[in-house]
Length: 160
Ligand code: SME
Figure 1 (cartoon, helix red, strand yellow):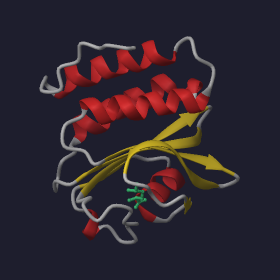
Figure 2 (cartoon, helix red, strand yellow):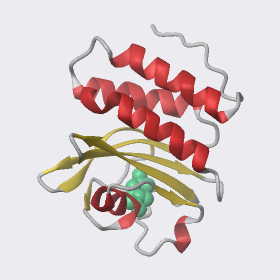
Figure 3 (cartoon, rainbow, N blue to C red):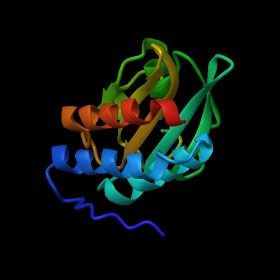
Figure 4 (cartoon, rainbow, N blue to C red):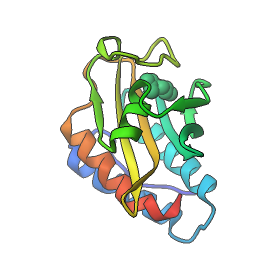
């Protein structure tokens, strides 16, 4: 069993520092990418307040394919350039979406989702996956969340 002393109500910068540390502890000795993504998805699910989906899409043969996650069953394949995830994968840039219904081409996997943060995971300059967070609350994510998840993405890029 793993126990982490993470205060989900801490200031975001502190919370993400703790999450990066916990993700490092969970993945440092484990070479299996699926196991590592599964534990990171669970970590985000447990400690990020007000989220209804946390997980990964991986780049497989030029499209995004669903990876380990927590939340409702989700769409399995997303072409590059489509939806919030496909836009992040194609551009290599974080997508911070305050209102998913205002995002052209947003792909609804859970009708409860109102806002979304998608951060690409890059290895050697190539997008290999994205981390996707959904919330039922409009405008749930801000630049601090984006920065924190980017730090996490950078820290685990060689382990997934
Ligand atoms: N909303 C995403 C699809 C993935 S689900 O949110 C889990 C998108 O528009 O790409």
